[in-house]
Image 1: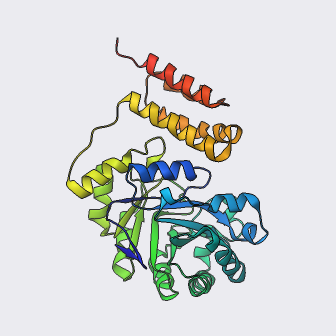
Image 2 (image 1 turned 45 degrees about the vertical axis):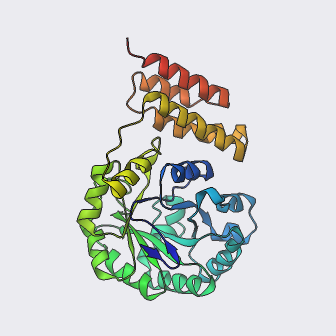
Image 3 (image 1 turned 135 degrees about the vertical axis):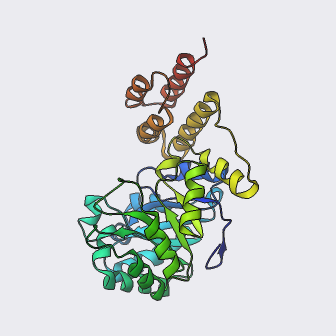
Length: 323
């Protein structure tokens, strides 16, 4: 598929996830075969106010490319200023978040709240698209709630306003991350616009990925929470869609090695103090379904050093060793 001048294989991309899809995780997912990654959403106001934290969110490495940065905001002028400032990070694509359901984002008229004001959303997309030299994409949801499902019309507005592609999460803002994703609405969006459509929601394995492609006709799929604690999912999806090959699950030793490597990468980029506190939620995901998982996940909540993470991995391997 093609997003502006960016060519992507029809495999799987990593979705933007605030507080989760940081540089270390994005690089790891790209290494495993994600065809494209989108960074953590950053505040347009924060960027224009020269927030150091916001700038850190937008930093991209060559190991991640092709990669997008993602901005959110509800003011066209501020979004344009932020978009122009963001070009210093040399993104391949600029994504606009119009789907985040978090109260602190939607409650301030940004993210998914923009689905309630499609005319304003269109003005933001047009202004940003006209201002920057890279393709602009938009990520949004099925609608605000079941009484205002407007993804199809919203996608048309995005296309008419200059978006190079759209990504659709098949739930309303009210539904957050349950019940199961609505594949029909993504298919309806695909049938309504001529720009590429990226499908997002409930992709956790090869079967769900294939079902998403088959049912929606999407140009690309985007994996979010399904990759947490399992970045090798992208290797499995890449092998399936390129060669029709079903890769086995990694061994527990391999999984723990990946977990520790992610922690080490995060330490290199953020320092041990910050990295290991943020690694706690990742470690909990790596430990799901294992023998003694509840105890080990509780232990992951107090990780403070890389040595702690490695020690936890060793304890997991010992507890799950075949008798």
